[in-house]
Structures are given as C-alpha cells and as structure tokens.
Amino acid sequence: MSNENFRRELNHTFDEMSGSPSPALRDRVRSSIAQAPEARGPFWIATVAACVIAVLVVGVLFVGNPLRRPTSNAGVGAPTASPGASPSASPGPSPSATPDAQLPAFTCVQQDFVFNATTAPTPTPPVAFVSSLRTGAHDTYDRVSVEFSNGMPHDVQISTRGDTTFTQSPSGMAATLKGRKGVLVVIHGSDLHSAYNGSLDIVTGYPILAEVKRLEDFEGVVQLGLGVNGSGCYRAFFLTNPDRLVIDLQGAG
Image 1 (cartoon, helix red, strand yellow):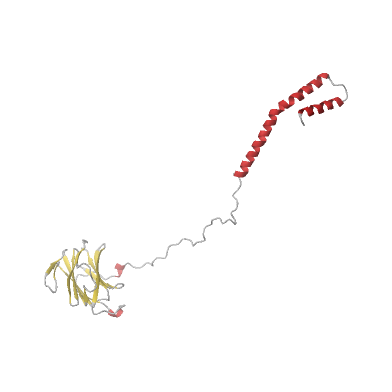
Image 2: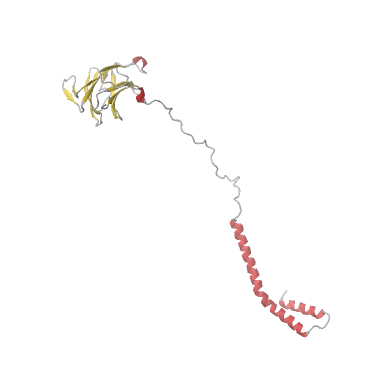
C-alpha cells in the first residue's frame, strides 16, 4: 500500500469515529503520518541489508561447512592399509660355530696331507689342474688357497724352514723370497699350466704372508715357496665347492 492510500484510509477511519475530535489532534496525527515514511526509511534499508548479510553468511557456512563432521567414504574406494603380513625378521642362516673352531691346530713341523678320495664328490684325477692361486689377510693369520678345476690332487707335503731361500726345479737355481721364514708346499699329481694363467710370483704386502712363488711345475709335481714374516707355523686342509687346498700362515706368537 502506498503512502497516499495509507493516509486516505486513516483519514476515512478518523472521520467515521463518533464524537468531535480535537482539531489539534487531527493535525498532529497527519503530521506524524507524513513524517513516518521518512523516519522509517533508514530502518527499512537497514533491515533489508541485515537480511542480505544474514543470507550471505548462511550460504558461506553451508558451503564451507566448518563444523560438520567428515562424511563417510564408504563406496568411494578410500585408501586403507593393505592386509600385508606383519613385519618379521627375514629368515637367515641358522647360527653355527665359527669356521676357525673346526679347523686343525697350527703346526711348525713337516706334514703330509693325503686327500681322502673315498669321500670326495668327484674321483681324484691322475693330474689335478691348478686353476687359481688366491691370498687373503685375516686378524691373526694370512691365507693361501690353491684351487683345482678337475678334482683334488693325490698328495700334498708342507714343511717350514728358517729362511726364504728355495731351490727351483728342474733348473736348480736359487730363489730368495721376501720375508724372514719360508714354507715349502709340494703338490704331487698336479700341474700349474693347463688351467692356470695367473701370476707365478705374487707379492702380497700382507703383514704375515709376504710372497708366493712357483718353484716347480714339472712332470706332475708343483712346488710353491711361501715367504712369511710370522712364526712359520701353518695349518692346512682341503675344502670342496670349489675343490681347493687351504694353507693358513700364523703370525708371530
């Protein structure tokens, strides 16, 4: 309803009232009605503005939803922990005695080592071909490994001496090795040329084993001279996979 219509309706109502109203009352009422729209204008605008702001706030809260709880991810393929096996220690080799505890004792005297062919995985050949000469340093001893490509040799003799001067065969020439004491290794039923192409004179630089030199490779007999800086005592044994003769040289006691 417009302001003009409102005034007319109100005047009509006052005219129908019984009694004679005070002329001043009619003027005051009309004056108040005339000023009402102007007075109500700012309040009406403020009310509309407040409603608009409230609608905006409600919309922001609805979209952002800061207080709502997380919705369920059921049926959406939410990532879950895979049902893998619980962590456990990987199966390692079972504990066993250290190899040194099962090895023979060191000795300083001449010994003859005969390989037990009855327990060998392969028969002993007429001539065992040396395929590799390996050396290694350990805490209290140094090692020489003589590997064979086709089986173990028949017989091995090992002896010690007080110096490092050896006689080469079949030339008969002397050979002096590094070190203070010597160990002579004689391998019967073997050769060092059919399957071996490594060095024939190995200078190691180890604290105990100083040098390994071929002294003989003739008619199925191989001689190796070892120059050592230790006691000259040794231990020797056979191992398989691969077939090899192992000689450990003891350090100074």
